[in-house]
Amino acid sequence: MVAELRTRAPGETVDSVAFRDMCRKFAAAEVAPRWEEADRDSHFPIEFYHAAARAGLIGMTAPTALGGAGLGVHETVIFMEEGSKINPNLPVSVLIQEIAGGLLAEFGGDGLQDIVRRNIAGECLLALAVTEPEAGNDIQNVRCSARRDGDDWIIDGQKAFISLAGYADVLVVLAQTDPSKGRHGMSFFAVDRKSAGITTRQLATYANRPVPTYGVDFKDVRVPAERQLSGGFREIMAGFNRERLLVAGRWLGHMQHAMEWAKDYAQTRHQFGKPIGSNQSIAFMLAQGHVDVEATRSLTYAAARRWDSGVPIKDIVLEVSSAKLFATQAVYRVTQNALHIGGGWGLTEELPAMRMALDALVAPVTVGSYEIQLRVIARQLGLPCD
Image (cartoon, rainbow, N blue to C red; front, side, top):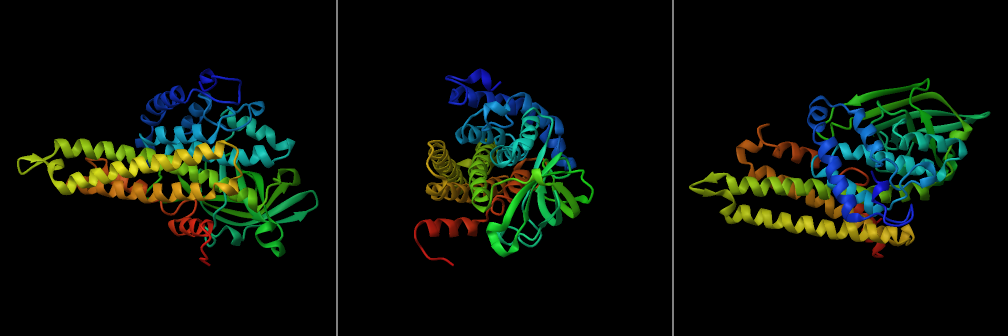
């Protein structure tokens, strides 16, 4: 589907308007009928991944030589926005493939490129195993270790909050290879999830349930040396910055969904002989929501355009963190106001308000918390904040 939208040579661009329309139709056909059951049962519908692969939405920024679409971050943000207008969770599975697959494509040797091809073809689901029970956002203190043993590496340790880990075919695992080098002594490894010594445990969560979260234990897991990626800490942070930008697109879509529902409900729900939206307090909530949506859109797409222009990543960190911070703050405001507008009914399953508010609760803590984004922004402004 994506290839049909190209307006120039492969790898250059697509018609953004047509691409957005395609993403909207894909979301209606593939997200809408699946997310509610997946949310209720806390399971990932693997057929969604297969459908995304058939549509050309897996590996959107991957090189065409590997079967990818060769697109930019701008198009990936469009997909995240349009998919999240229906549900903000299932599109995250595509985001994970984008980040994990991007690491394999850019820093994996020849032997790992086949994993990328199979991932793009819908034959190999990936999960990104970075965060840990203690380290959390503190990536520099990762304790999961990899020690060399002949032609192999032996991985030991724990990971936590790993989305899709129980479904993935391959885990892209961050491990400490040389503690004496601190943050520069870490590497990623492509590890078969069914390798001996790996166990997964699904975590019960209130949000993000269609893309289940897992704890993962590694005990003497043997990984061939050619499964080590060449990227180090700088490349890790580059991947995180791209993920933060895509996450901003996710929350942009979700807050639009919440705003549309809240406006409609405020106009049709009557109290004291008039629509509740005619009350100034409700109208002001909706007015603030409009500003939140438009400001998030401006920040997110401006950063995406700068990213695709080829500017060094270090020069757009300020824009990326600003977009991510504002989007996560805004989606919390918008969904909490939608819940308030729903009143007593908003607390029931009769209305979608509570579900929307619960899903937004993960916004402040994923891919760098509020506080981390503020610290990054302050440092980019030349302000000491250690």
